[in-house]
Image 1 (cartoon, one colour):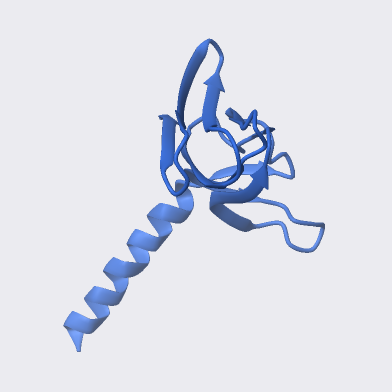
Image 2 (cartoon, rainbow, N blue to C red):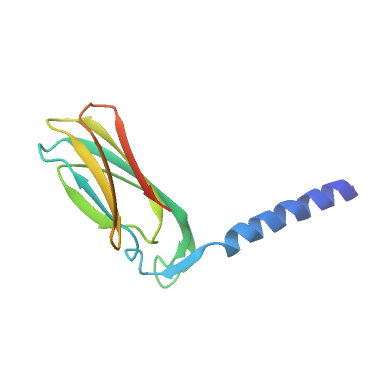
Length: 127
């Protein structure tokens, strides 16, 4: 019985450590890395970005939702921002004409990658 209690206490301390490591961004979820998907021929793509965990406010009643991932599907060029100043993004070409590319920018640092083959991915990251 003591081992079970010790195991539960160990798991709870790990969960508390992860929760404490989250960055609180409030309702400002577009204040981090800039990302841009380029698809000059109008190709379709799927974007998946991962970043350090955040907590954010959805509305006045739900003020502590957390996230560490953003997924978007689209076609043609699109840009946006991650909630924090670190992360890695992967874009996968899903169809259409022309290549797709992903770039992330932090200050003067720019990292980019691209692909022209449907089903292949391009990945970038600034940690």
